[in-house]
Every structure is written in structure tokens, then in C-alpha cells.
Length: 339
Ligand code: PLP
Ligand code: COI
Image 1 (cartoon, rainbow, N blue to C red):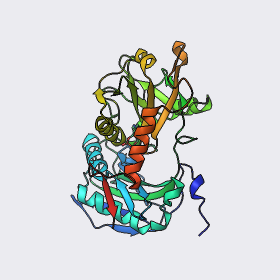
Image 2 (cartoon, helix red, strand yellow):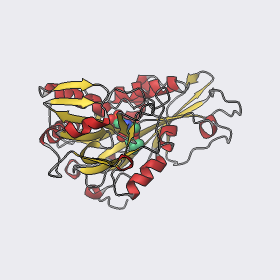
Image 3 (cartoon, rainbow, N blue to C red):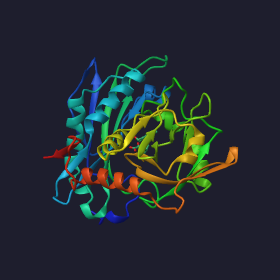
Image 4 (spheres, rainbow, N blue to C red):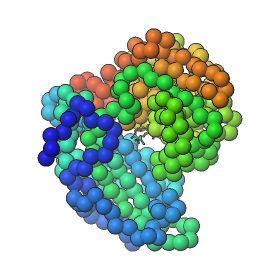
């Protein structure tokens, strides 16, 4: 194997040794299969190809200073995948099967788990797709669940640094009663143009406003939003954003740190009042926000006045990473150690 430059990994795909698969046929999930092929063999009329019956997840495994490998909150990802499956009428994979598959995929690719010192991690990508051949718009009766893993570095260039974001008014990612709360490919397809334009203009990512009133902050294309002021952690409550497991964890950590936590609609104007803000997610971890521009409205909300991550973002980041890498006690039982 070519030497991997662990410390300089980007958030990209790298081939690993194995992936795992479980098929759903005749009303039941089958045995777990191990594959070394990067290909899937699909019927051309599969519902995932035509009607978007496709769900995915994203979680990470971390190698600690003690050499142990820890997976963060995998039961939460299992539950969110089940919720997505109910949302787009796919067969739900039981939590125990999800766990078995994650552990197998991580163990079989042990040599790709980055060393502690690199600050990198192993990204775990579960995928669940409708495989039954159908032309009518109906849920499939056959599904494939698959997990591949790949070593990754930071999602946003620069890692833990304050960077600029932009509000997009031209595009919506999800409708108020649509599929924004589910982790399905269609939401990401809907974000591609806005994301491309944001990157081309030099921003880390695009922010969406609520689609109905265009008044409240929803989230980025791949991360939730939080703001900090008056010792309070504030994060949007919205029917069109993905329930982020990182955000849920940060709310708990903020509370542990003696902060107040508020989950409520966050109007765009409120951005002027935050002392700090961040984008958070499995891939993004905490990406501190330097400023959010709203060019179509002529506003620029500067949050990190000195251009640096603020003290609370830094403390939350260190605490979260500490738990993930095993440097801090896992007081909430969030970590599964790979035996
Ligand atoms: N929002 C969107 C749209 C995402 O794609 C992600 C990434 O999974 C998140 C938020 C963050 O969620 P989590 O913290 O569970 O990774
Ligand atoms: C994640 O944070 O796991 C994501 O899925 C974000 C992105 C890569 C889609």
C-alpha cells in the first residue's frame, strides 16, 4: 500500500479494503455480506435511480492516544436512518443490524483508521437504496444497505478556523413540510447550484433561509447553525433542517458547561447580536463562522470581529473532540469502543 499522508488528508474518497452489504428481499433483511468490490450491480429500473429512494448517513471512528478506536453516537445515526426510511417509505434497518455493519466495516478496514496525532478520522458512510425494478411511482419492495469507509481530514479548508459564509436567496434546499429533516440524496442535489456558486465566490458554504418566509436561518448545505450570546447556545428550530447529531451533542455540552440552550427560530437580523457562531456536523465538526453575507439584501453580518474562532466555540470544539478521541471522559455514553 502507498503510504498515506495522514496529516494532510482532505474530505475525499479513498479506496479501502472492504465494504459491507445487507439486502432486503421478500420482507426480510438477509445476512451481512463482505465485499471488496467498489461497484454495485443495479437493475436499471431500480427506484433509487428514478424516484430518489435513497438515504445515507455519516459518522466517524477515531483512534485515541491509547490506540483504541471509538465510534461516536452510532445508535443516533441508526435512529435517524430509520426516521429517513419512514419518511420516504423504505424498509427500516434495525439498530442492532446497523451496529453490526458499522463495527464490521470499521474493523475490516482497521489499517485505514488515521493515527491519533494526525487529527484525521475514518468517515463511515452508510447508504440505503431502493433496488426493486419498477416504473410506477411506488416504494420498492427490495433494498440494499451498504457501508463503506474512507479516511478523511477537515471538510472545510483550514479546519478549525473562522471563515465566511453566504446566504442564498435564489434557492431553497427543502420545503417546510418537505424532506429537509431526512438525510436523502435529493436534498443534496437541491443544494448543488447554491453550493457551487458560494464556493466560486470564495465562501465556505451557503446558508438557507426558511423557504416559506425567507426570514429565519435554516442551515447550511451540510451542517446546522448555532450562535452564542449572553452565555446562551442558540440553534434554529425548523421543520426543514436535518436533526444534527453533532448539534444535539453540543447542546448537551453547552448545558454541561453551565450555558443556557435555546432551540427556536433565529431571524436573520439576530445575526448582528451573536458574539460567536458556528456550522456544526459530523464532517464540519465545528466550523467557526467569521461572517455571513447576504449579498442579495446588501447585508454583511460580521461575527468574529478579530477573524478568529471565539472562546466558547473553541471550548466546545475541544470538549467534543476530546470525547471522540478518548481524551475526555465519555460521561454521556456516546462512544462505542471497537473491540
Ligand atoms: N445538516 C445537513 C444538511 C447535513 O448534511 C449534516 C451532515 O450530516 C448535518 C446537518 C449535520 O448532522 P450530523 O451532526 O448528524 O452529522
Ligand atoms: C456529514 O457531516 O456526515 C455529511 O453528511 C455532510 C456531507 C458530507 C454531506
